[in-house]
Image 1 (cartoon, one colour):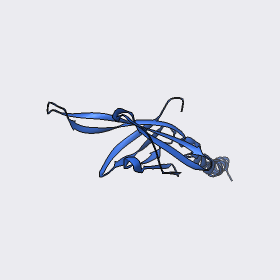
Image 2 (cartoon, one colour):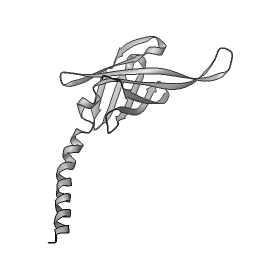
Image 3 (cartoon, one colour):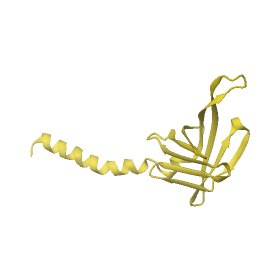
Image 4 (cartoon, one colour):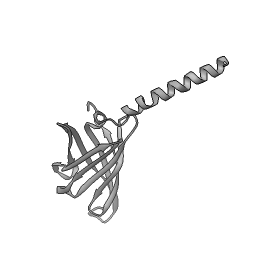
Amino acid sequence: MTRKNLVLRRSFSAALILAPILAAGCGSARDVIGTWEGAVHLDVTLPDGRPATRAFRRVIIVRRDGGQFKATLASPDEGLGEAQANDVTFKDGALNVVVPSRSETYDGRISPDGTELRGTLKQLQSDMPLVLKRASGS
């Protein structure tokens, strides 16, 4: 075996060993725990009849209680306090938060660096894109 083939073989073997180890850390439960902030953008009509786009903030706080995920959802711009989610799952980098008291569901995927959730907020019949960023210190 030539030196070049030996180096290539060792590099390939190292990649095979490291890939599952590195992948296991992506989307782990600890990555999603914290405070996530973003805004949905809605087209509205102003009192004078002009169209406009307004941003309505959403804050999702995810924590672990025993072996289960728990979450709250807040809508600060609408004056709504925190609402408790009754179903929270996080698996393979996908977060699902269901808040029946607000008729809202959030489905998102965590970014590889763990700083962002990209997904959809479903409210009644509307699906709205919602990107959540990890709050500083979270």
